[in-house]
Length: 206
Image 1 (cartoon, rainbow, N blue to C red):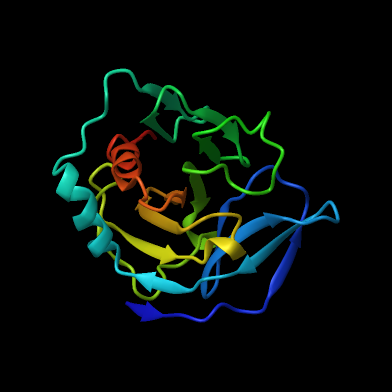
Image 2 (cartoon, rainbow, N blue to C red; image 1 turned 90 degrees about the horizontal axis):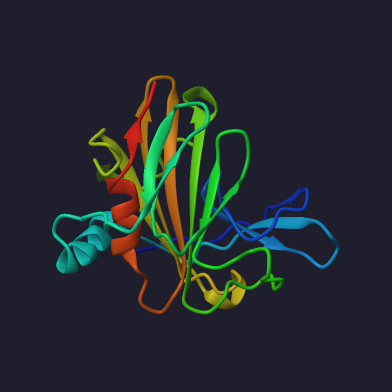
């Protein structure tokens, strides 16, 4: 493990429902709803782990992630990508090319805290020249449609991140875009197998 101290920088953003992982220089930013009607991105990285270690943990339960038959398919309206996700999950939009997946219904959950034992997955697409660069400590990955990319895992203090214990970011380039699939886990034993299966189901369009 490599110990990484969180930065003191705080970015003010317009109100956004839930918590999302953003590409912020120097570490993963956790978006936390503030009482003032705005959201604060506070870098709260406590420990960075090798994604290879987590991939090995997920592989222990499933050496080749298989998408369950009852999962649903999502296709990007712009035709850039598609993937599968658990049928009980909820889908929302996070921006022009972004999709938010949650294991809970954000329309009925009003707390800024993640529900207990929940997962949130962000799918973010950005032009390569504007996207987050490969962070220090990232390891090679081919989870996204077999494309060579990278992944990294951050371990958090849940008391400072709305209950989130871990973030696992998987990224790869295709065409002129960089694609990110990031899981946020409010779990003592993060369900990495589900995140890896979502990433493994990923296909690129145009």
